[in-house]
Image (cartoon, rainbow, N blue to C red; front, side):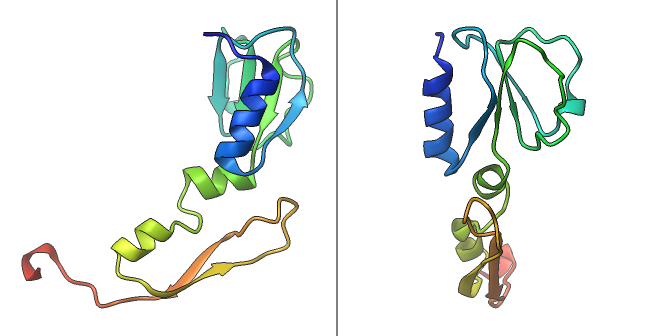
Length: 123
């Protein structure tokens, strides 16, 4: 199923809270390559677009392909970030977001007071 670059960008923004189109492509997106960094991908891709976590070293790599990028949103949604569900499962208390000056305005993580840790046999 092909998507327009605009539809893919809109979905990423909804899912990750922020995303940008670093470079437009030449048509619909049938294949999407994913990587943390441009150097993690081979020079030739069987894809119409590339999604990068860190696009700062993109340069002129992957000519003709659309390039989408999300840094802060990726950190928050796809890594631990301020993962409140995990923090509560671990028994953390007084969970507070860590606020840093970020272009996206998104939180950088969370701090909390550790709760009493119990092993499975104690429950």
